[in-house]
Length: 366
Image (cartoon, rainbow, N blue to C red; front, top):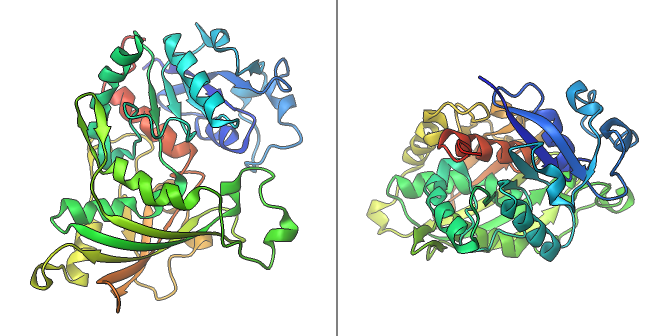
């Protein structure tokens, strides 16, 4: 099979580098175009990242000698790639305008950025949960007058720690009324150079700007439905969150307490909850997408798991790993969940979105 030529916007940043590495030897996609800020433009990729390559292994040879283009000039990408992954790091209004400019040139954008997450005709995808939101893309193209281009985004990384187990329970007939979530988020989520080491070592920072609002609201769009050419939010669950930064490199952890919206005699037992989680699969597994985990939710029974260092790479870094499932004295049950924030929560999650789009025919006529 001939590989699809793809580009990476923001290719020199932390998430962009992760895209470059994860796309090395991908069975469907080949990186043929890289773009970043004007200060990197004109350099070979290997020279632009020589002093700040963060992935821990060699720069992929096929990308090392590519010339970095200015990401602000969308016309440079025309003819060099079929679609782009967006890992742009700039103001939200600038990102929103630039992603639209690429789409207007007929280049679909699979984005990690938050700028378009609340655009009502842009799907915010976790492929195991809301693949049906792809239906809104036809309306998005019509609304904007785009022929081939469109925008699809992924949600905030911290949500993906617990969204699949929540969805699996609701899909199994156990609706959730309320949740309290406390996240312990890795320093890599702050980008590079991120939080100063002197502020982070021997410390926990109990505030991440904008993160609690994302945690409380984005889940409602993900659980929503397509209606009249836009995505309507779900009514619940109600989420109260506290988001903290902890001295861990990769892997976001969430402590979750939840209450079911059911009469007492209809609420699931711990055994029933675990059965729902371990049996859960969805469209990415059915389609056998290359980046999809075989087991999207993995339950551990050790009293001291999950742990970022030990569990973040489960299922190629794409699983939600759950432990400490137990009764809650305030709500119904509580548990600890972990996901890899720079894989499932960032670049590999974006690649999975692109694989779903390809499998569903959205790149067929580019």
